[in-house]
Length: 90
Image (cartoon, rainbow, N blue to C red; front, side, top):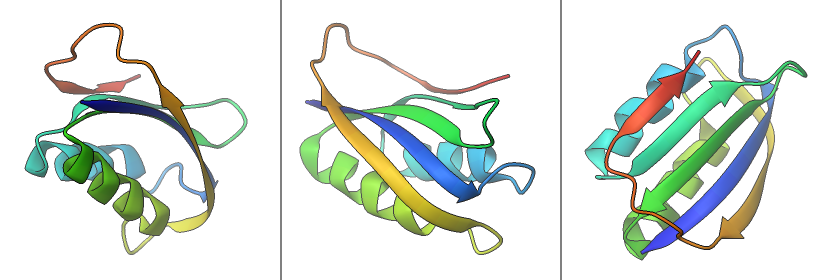
C-alpha cells in the first residue's frame, strides 16, 4: 500500500480536473481525495496498491484533454489509516 500527496499546477481549475481524477482513481481502485486550492492549483491524496498509484500519478501529470498541467509535486506519505473511497472536497 502506497500513499502520495499531490499538488497539481497549471490550468487545472474550472475545467473538470477534480471530477476527471476521481473517475480515473475509481477505475484504478484508488482511494483518497481531491480539492481546489486558493492559489489556483489542485491538491490530492491518493492511496492504493503500488502499481495502481504509479498509474494515477502518470495520469495526473497529463490531466484531461482540456487541462494544461504545468507540474505535479509528489510527496510520499506514510499510510496512517486505510482510505476506502475517493472524494471531491468542495
